[in-house]
Length: 97
Length: 537
Ligand code: HEM
Image (cartoon, rainbow over all chains, first blue to last red; front, top):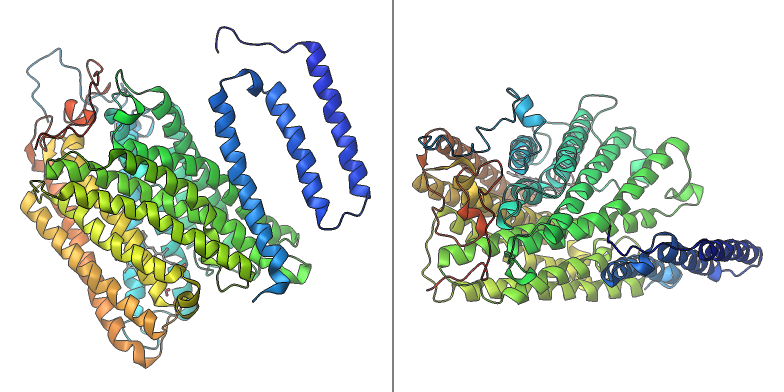
């Protein structure tokens, strides 16, 4: 642990929690609408924002060295490409050459 | 083993049993060198089991029709051969054995960052291996799906797939923990003066590999659990009759298994980058280019998995994208080969056994890589997919590449590990037997594949007879060479001539430690002032 370890105040934590609850409500509301192809995309996008908030505040990434964020960014990018490439296959499947 | 005149001298890691007796001193040791040897011995046993299965398959294929086993037994053979060779030999191979033994020494560290986790990895490895092998003995027999466990067949077959899948899952954990351990070691434990760009290339290769182990392995873990869930609960993820998508399984499987191919080859490339400068007495050519090409291979390697699925009903645009990406990986691989060749240029080359195996690696890997391009091009792959051409190709890469790098590594670090030298002449002879036999064994497979002989059958049409006879002959030569190699090494271990710290006159730090190294590796931790390959030629 580094010496000048940042401790997040209660108020901030509560705001983060409120944000997470709101995002959850949005997820549920959006699921009611019929977005077809976009359903998964929207659900994943909201989930990503929520995960980002948790990482930044609850897991202290915001207050740690920037290199950790960069590492995590690369990992997420790789993961995102997995999903995008798989869906490239899936969404073109009916129009196969 | 070594001179024991000086009483004060700390014990070497063979003598220092940590106060325990017999086998306990090994299986409870957290010394990275002892754990590395545990891996070496267990891995060698599995390798020999795999080779035996390979020989049996080749024997069956010496003539068309049934020779020694039934079709179903043969199906079990190639599955188990594949599972053993992939999950128990090439994936853990070089990192677990030589990464463990040599890497901390090369970094000037006393051990890896998490020694206990390191031992746990070995236990997981053994547990997974035992589970994989026991599929042979219990239930309805060895799985017959091929090492790739493709759905929907893997969901339907009556054989022991769940257990084999679970074994691979546990082996994955072992791999993840080793990766984590090495990453932390490389980040935190380098000795004074060892900046990132003074680090030996073997450590760099392990660094790139560890990132793949850490990030890609969980994907296969989940995928294998999905297969298990599908088999036991019938969830309908991959089974088309339940609305699942079998191609999704192939995506998930190869999202891991293709990066895993780089887990296999990158450490091998690292070994070669260590050996060439020592035996050419030259500074390695293009150090930074080799470093970045390792990282590039690790990175691009994540995005090419689709090239295993060109003929499996994937959509056209996806095929084109994956084919382009596949050609991109060839670039960093070729950068390495050119750098190695440039290192040799004008060097004073000494053809000792490690160097011979390293040169053998370059030659065989080149054939493997080029046949890979043929298989990666959309037009040619339609003809070659699932033929013996592919079997030839991946043996050239995995056995000719990683296997030979493994042999090179054992011949290179042997005197460091045991403090003795094997018979150089015998080892040189063994190299030529294995190298020659290898080409007799696998080149005819490329040929049979071009003629259209499909893989994974115990039988074939009479027109493929000649390449198959030659190939089976080759398998005997290789097996003979491997046995001779083991004999030479065991003899060297028993009564080889004792060597000093640095029999090859190499400059990396492990050669400053005693042979065998003391438990703590160095009496005083070294301080580094220049790069690892400053040979004055
Ligand atoms: C003397 C040594 C070896 C022999 C004789 C041998 C022989 C064979 C043969 C004949 C096949 C094709 C079976 C078929 O498609 O019907 C095969 C498949 C395979 N071999 Fe080897 N092999 C040897 C060593 C190795 C090594 C060292 C590796 C890995 C490093 C390896 C990995 C594999 C894999 C992954 C398969 C594919 C299994 C499958 O189709 O699911 N082999 N081997």
